[in-house]
Length: 118
Image (cartoon, rainbow, N blue to C red):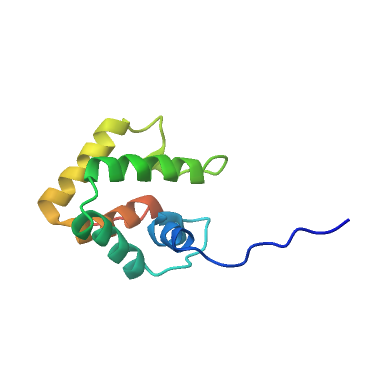
């Protein structure tokens, strides 16, 4: 029986998925494979430079985080029993308007890691 050759080439979509996935920025129990700055820079680019709608961005991030933590203890900030999705999305979208994208993304990383932020 022959083994299928595994595709070892990275597509631009593969790299993009890593750069936008907050799990790759090190949310326990997962290891950090990209720096905070790399992750934050890519979020800023997506929202500010590429014009991605902040409402859709946070809807996607919340869904992605929940899928990533399926079967794992999830951070309180994404626990469906503790938050209302619309309120969570609205609060983070409003933080961008008040504090800017970079500061909001830094605070989001701290939030999902369970770290306090000012």
